[in-house]
Length: 610
Image (tube, rainbow, N blue to C red):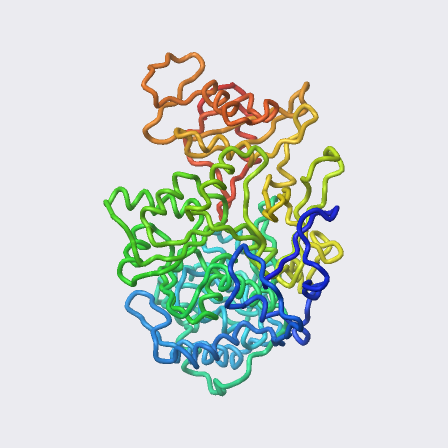
């Protein structure tokens, strides 16, 4: 799409003229009426960040809205080419398509029906990728479970979706046995294992994916069935309890086409699965590569050694990352003296911004790669905005980001996305800041629970509240301040933890910073920072003697650093704690701020180590 609409609640920002404005996308499209502007979204002339003139009479291309439609393209263009690699296993396009269709027919024959929910837990594999297509192929809904969960956490998620089938990696056979023996969910009528159970004596209780494929008697030429919802993707939200986000076929298609248009995926790409297929980032990027016709390289789960080996062995051209993954790749490459991986041409980062150090390191290691940063959420089917971050002409922007006290720039919206700023009336009249809202075919159907979908919690008049706060600059770029619910009210002023964390993390001795507020009789809330320091740096308490070696971090040093970085005085933390062990995180990698806060409140000794 050449023109996107991005305005705040008062009409600020650029708007296309009426003559060049695309039809407004309002509400949600059903499976029968999902019309998408593919001419605009997937325009070969589209250049990210530039507006292009629209044709006088835009042509609407109707899409029936099913993610399995990518199989036809794979069969037509990539039938004899390798499209999936996992260990010693290689599949060409024809084999992959046959595997998906056989698996779909086999599941249908064994009782899975349109509208049923099928839960899946396991590591990345070709079979897992086939399941992501085969289950929706027959009109059922796939519900991936996080393999990092405990059994008890998985049960909480299963209670929301009440699956009719449970498909699991052999390493999770104990989960299946406990579910079978306890009869917690009488709805589960089919247990299918990916690979062999860890204990082969348990095999009699289960049927394997391979057997489901081999024993199907139905035709594999059946047409895919659309039931609107294709996927239930779990997110922990702010409470830590799993929430099932119901995502439609249309949303997944729109998201995939946006990634193809912006990042530039194509048939020649070799994509390494660094992200788990139970997360929306991993799923949406997987579907984008399937639609583009690229090749998938799957490793069970990420570790830097396996990833670098796969990149070198298979000449990987693209992958997605989060700051933790990129940091691990940089650390491993330095340790093993890896000079560079020239095959990589595209990297998409999400889940938080990369530091200047990581951007510079990645640009050196992957010297041919364009690096993009994306901002998004599960409820919006992954990425809302994109921004290239390692182009030479962006140095001015990078300098602006490092000195910006009003959040972090996350780029411009992808072609299909509307973003609006709902201003906070408690802010001054001159402030552009407010809640970040989004609307379009990319947003979730709702939260799944007890076979119903509820949208009342986050959607108002078609606009999804992202839960984040930010503002839009004159060039149409979105600036992210932080989470609405994490906002600190100190001395009558609003302080966003992410803004302060961004400044602290730029100090060369700080590895990670987590900021939150604690009750204070005078200020309402006092700002506290917990910091972990890098291995070759030393934390100095207020009473300790400074050795003057240069690689020291203290509360005083960090306070001065915040002021040098032009952070407003009321935003500078008043208490600092040296956190000497890993920060508590959820299974999806989010910091457990309340747990961290409780630990600090239990031992309120300023400038101490925890």
